[in-house]
Image (cartoon, rainbow over all chains, first blue to last red):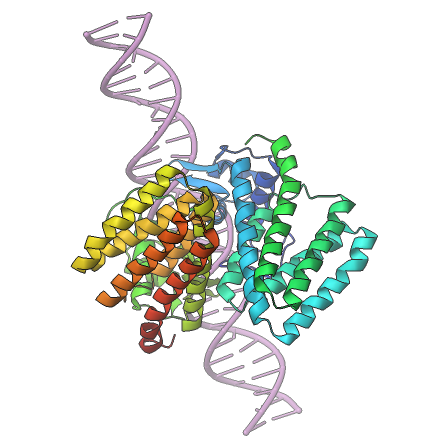
Length: 227
Length: 227
DNA sequence: GTTGCGGCTTGCGTATACAGAACGCCGCCG
DNA sequence: CGGCGGCGTTCTGTATACGCAAGCCGCAAC
């Protein structure tokens, strides 16, 4: 959304502040940095071999993203991501996706529609091969295509932003082949509703689809870490 | 949302970077700083009698809020808020509000329900008196009460954030008494749907309510400035 | 006349330095 | 023995300095 980064997702290249931000994001998501942990600027600067300035920028960006909390003159701490909060985020993204697919159903151009169908067809061999990484990539494309088909740039940005935020906590991805084919089946049902021009139906199915994915993950979260 | 500031809304006090941020926010919203205007860090630092460091922090925060755009090594410009983009924002907030009221209908506690009814009743004398400022304040409370009644903290934060973003461009508020009573009537219809426990109905009515307010404003925006 | 190259200028990204506020600790007093 | 106040440390907030990358303009060559 707001932050316009170059095409870089690789580290080790580009702005140091971005590298620090990415590293901290990973560590927070991985739980290496526990919730509530104090984030000392000087300390982080030393760790990354940089000065405090880029560390500060990284912290500000993370604060904007909700990963850290900044108290005036008392430094930053890792935001506490309770299981409840993560579930709230899942529900929110599910609702937003539901809105997106409803609007997209009514507004997508024939070109966008064929592009989506093409994408969806492409996912069949991926599921059959059980290629998780490929499916993840496809899945992202699939949903983002829907975002853009709303023809509402702002809404699309919001959806992508929240989705990315959530992805930070999704490293423990589902690696069950079963979930893969179920996901595709759900996509299929959504596609059908879109084809029939029934936005409301597509919306309900999308919401269910997202919540299914969420509850599959929730077990890990519940069992994983209390905070 | 993410940025936790002290209770301060007054300027002239507290962190300099916050003062700069507030000042720039006001100027951008007021149109003093036109869309696309270059934001030179040194220049701004001189204007505010500060150094570049707090200016940078302010710009980063504004970028996170979407008010300015930062291109790497090419400085910042005021984000171009086209009428289309503002309408997109209105539609997005309308959809999110619709989601909120649906969830709230199904989840609100009796206490929250009575609180909302109480609030709604309070708005009648305000409308009759034609007190725009008071209605604005009430309206904010009304909607935020609904957000919180979703019992989804994250969703509530998102709703408030987007609503606040939009408010920056709402200085040309509607000052028509007619709109006031229409707004209250629409609230009334929403309340009725909530009372009947019909979340879908409440959702549709909320969406219509928000879009009504948006189209009322759009004339000003269209007529006002092209960018 | 047009196009490509090279130096110059501007301003961002980062580093370092200084001042003030918050927290902890120790000693003193009740 | 416990509470309170002063002092020191530590870390944030801000200021200043430096290097480099990108844009721009002019000149020269074709």
